[in-house]
Length: 305
Image (cartoon, rainbow, N blue to C red; front, side, top):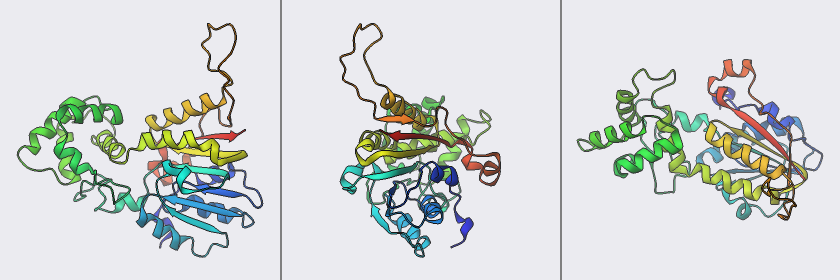
């Protein structure tokens, strides 16, 4: 497999901030094509183990091939990172959570993640689940579609797009990404510098894979799987994800949740993380030039106490 098949976003920054140590155990919670794990193996070969998780079986198998020559001990697990408490039964010294879609998924026309002509409307990371983008587009009511586009895509023309989708599907089932792109383009014509369907596709992907809830679930469990001093490195790609992560770290670092009007604290809140990045790290200009899709990435890091 060509080494340029997949760009791993901020891989050096992610691994540097893990503070790798001898005999440590690390978790790549969203393995993808294995880029961050490869960087870990290239950085140190004296760690104890790397646990690699991905919900996409095909991505997992490709990553295994890319990591076949690694001298590090690697454990591969097929599952969703939100179920981390069920997937592993040990503590780790660092976690990387990269919330981006892999190049393999984007380029595969059967997966339906991109705008390219002929892509099936699927968008499932876990191919065994029933809900697909096709089902949402062709069966959800105008109200449901409108709310989905508003809440998950922050699409200002959510109702108009939902109405046009309903009008077009009454004539013919919508089955491909280019059909959907054409429909959205009628509404968002010349309204933005980005591809007119970007927010619609984002909303569908989030809804199909229940992405935001998965992030919340994982974060709630993260402190229980990290050893003291362990780093949690998270890379987000849009404001909805980043908002969740920022809020989590802020709450985890606080020592009290009592309202300001209260004279004395009785909440018994404990600080569980120390924020390492007061402001999120962003890709370098050079990385953005090489991989334009990295431009929206933000990295936030916390250290378990």
